[in-house]
Length: 358
Ligand SMILES: *Cc1c(COP(=O)(O)O)cnc(C)c1O
Image (cartoon, rainbow, N blue to C red; front, side, top):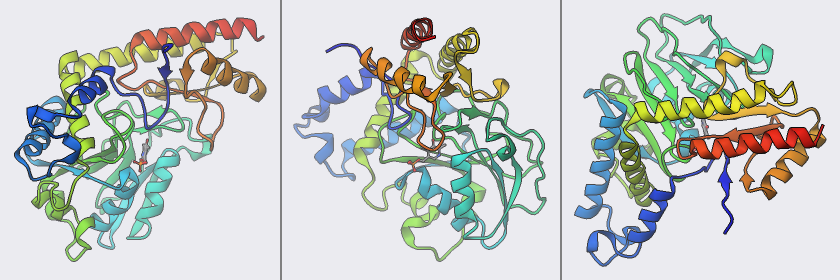
């Protein structure tokens, strides 16, 4: 099979080593003669998986003691609703509007209370991260989207919220860089971009926020349920949690988040350099200082050329370069599991394509 380079935005590339390991153990997990797919979520073998996954998440990300880690379902999209349902209680929350994902989070929050859009980059088609915010002193929390997967913009530094808890959708850049938990009240991420397969959502919540959650909610939509039952109130997505555990082993093997961050910086630099040195053939859509290191969005001189680029790239083994249907253009998603070699190969292809398709 010819080598394929996977640039899909999500579900997305996983480390080959992780998939190989899962393949090796698929029929016989831990020598028990059964598959991880067919054992009880209350068995001691699965307990070791979920406990180890949590411990590694905590140590790699530097999660403080006073935070609870949960493995939930329903994707990041369910979090858009669960957050205000549990925390707003008819009050007010501040949201920073940076694109398609922030928009969906705002829409859900409006069902449960008052939303103050504290800043927005809609005036320039969501091509930048705002720098001035009108936070409300009485807001229950401030919500931001760490990396806008569709628009290709990313926060470098989160805003100073003056003590309000920051809630961050990190679906597309969690574990891509180190984070400082100082102002953070909660982070959450659908797994399928950087840390695993679809089906599990990682939620990490500060305990005082957890305790403040509304009572009387339907059981499955209450954070308190999942915190109390250690994500085992009902059957969790066992296999997806197992893959997260393997991805954490892989990140440890790379040297942890500082090492991952360094590689991601090099990858982003390589591809944005190629864009910037193309004499305007490729045009990055994001404000240079807010460019995402995970999702590189760019245009070509015409839509016809974009289509040809995507098709030729596919023939050459570069898969998933089409931009999101809502914005068009091209997008190269270069999550953790994409190596510098893959990015360099893409850069070479881009240079060749530009020369041959003036
Ligand atoms: C993909 C994505 C989501 C939606 O995730 P689902 O798991 O499909 O619900 C939300 N936010 C961001 C930033 C994303 O990239």
